[in-house]
Amino acid sequence: MKLASLKEGGRDGTLIVVSRDLSRAVKASGIAATLQAALDDWNTLAPRLNALSEDLNEGTADGAFALDMARLAAPLPRAYEFVDGSAYLPHVERVRRARGAEVPASFYTDPLMYQATSAGFLGPRDPVAVPSEDFGIDLEAEVLVVTDDVPMGVTPAQAGGHIQLVGLVNDVSLRGLIPGELAKGFGFVQSKPRSALSPVFVTPDELGDAWKDDKLHLPMRTWINGQWFGEAECGVDMQFDFSQLVAHVAKTRPLTAGTLVGSGTIANEDTGKGASCLAEQRTVETLRDGSPSTPFLSFGDTVKIDVVDQAGVSIFGAIEQVIQQA
Image (cartoon, rainbow, N blue to C red; front, side, top):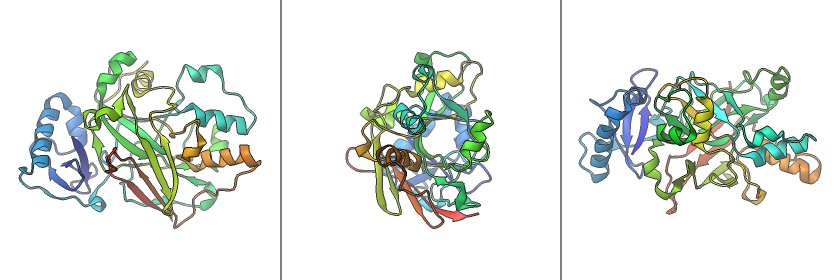
């Protein structure tokens, strides 16, 4: 099934069930007011939501209406926790090689992760507001998963069973602020503003063969100002799958239902597939030409991020945003 949230009913929106073709929706009235409420009691409420989804797809759901992407908030307008990884090591290797640094051996056995901003997420059509272009505005097209309650110390084999939803995220980064923050040795704060989530989240079974080994096996398609930017393969060159990432986070603490875990920027060894963030593209240019030629985003630029199925139909709906001055 596919779930989303309308921009109504307070900070956490109103939960709706969305049809497989993203054309119709119905409010989940009487089941759960919000997606967080559904996740809090997932084992009980998911079967009821799934039944409503089947009715909607069969055309028998009462109260169904045409879906307007502009009316959607993020599926989870705010979350208890968002932990983002860097599971695609070709990206890490290239970035470090461009500055003459080697990749530590531990990076191949222990995931890179950080605690990201979760107090609020942008909706799929909300603008990205930044105070200054000098901050180096960048997109990062990623896959994420949403968990139910995860016990502390789960193994990767156990963690896969706690992944209940899959979606996309534009993990907005301010590249000009990152070096100064990393130099402090204490992580990101100012360089990571609010991220945007895809219009809908989907259950893994909705993905069919595209969800295998706790990875999404489809290309991540990105455009900047309407021009193709990349279609890196999500299921290729992912060093750590999502069950491993979830288990890594839960090693010393339990995770609350509604925790988001991100994959990091999608990147492949094959640079011919384009990139999923400007920093990646600029690194490729630096290694090839000695200096980058692609600029970071400017006010008025547009970004689109999408994943489609084998028939070319959008699965999660597209993130489509304009960059504007705060």
